[in-house]
Image (cartoon, rainbow, N blue to C red; front, side, top):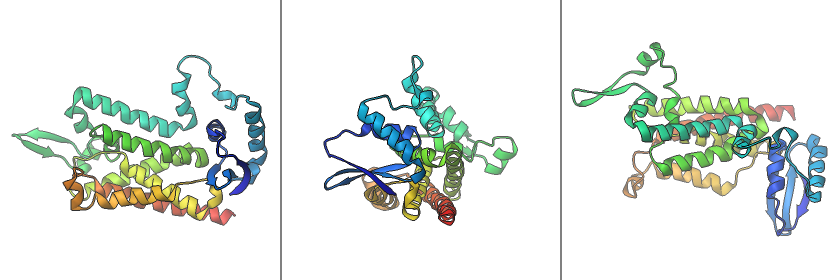
Length: 282
C-alpha cells in the first residue's frame, strides 16, 4: 500500500470513501494518532485518485458519469451498479425469505439440497443423485438462499455485503460469482455429508469471503483488501463457539457448522491460489 494523504480526525471522509469504491480505486483508510491516513493499492491509479481528491475538496460531485441519477428509483439501483453479483445475491435472499413467509414449507422443500416431503406421517428424503438426474440442478447451491429468522438473515447479509463488495470492487464481478458458486456448493455439500438435509443460509459463503479477503490482505498487502484483525478473531471465534455444547445452552443450537467450515476452507484455498498468482506478477 502507498501512503497518499493525512486527514484530520474531525474531517468526514465518508463521501470520498464511497466515491473511491464507485470508481474501483483500491484503497484503505487507517486511523493513526495524528489523523486518518489514505493508502492507495495500485500506484497506476494515483492520477485518478488525485483528480477525485481535488473534486472532493472543491465540493463537486464525485460519482462516475454512468452512475448519475437519471430518474426515480436510482438510489435502489446504485448497489446493483456498484456490486451487481453481491447485490443480486442479497436481493434474492430477501425475496426467498419473503416467499417463505407467504408459502412456508413449500419454498423450503423446493430449495433444500435434496427433495423432502411427508409420507405416511414421517419425513421422506430423496437423494442428491436422483435430484440432479431429474434436472433439479439448483439443489447443491439453493440451500444458501434459505434463512430461518430475521437475525439469521441480517447477520448473513451484513457480512455478504461487507466482504462481497470488496471482492467485486478489486477483483471484479466474475471473481465474486466464482467464489459464490464454488463456496456455496462446497459448504452445502460439506453439511450434506454429515447426513443433514434441513439446513440453509449464506454463512458458508460469508466464511469463504472472509478467508479470501483475509488471505489477500495478508499475502498481497498492495491488493487493497482489508479486514480488521478483530473481525477475523470474532468470526472464527464465533464459528468455534457454535461447535460447542455451550452454544445450545444459550439458544444457538442447530447451526450448520460443517457448512461454515467447508466455506472457510474453500475461501482460504481460493485466496491462496489467487494471492499466489498476484505475488508471481509482482
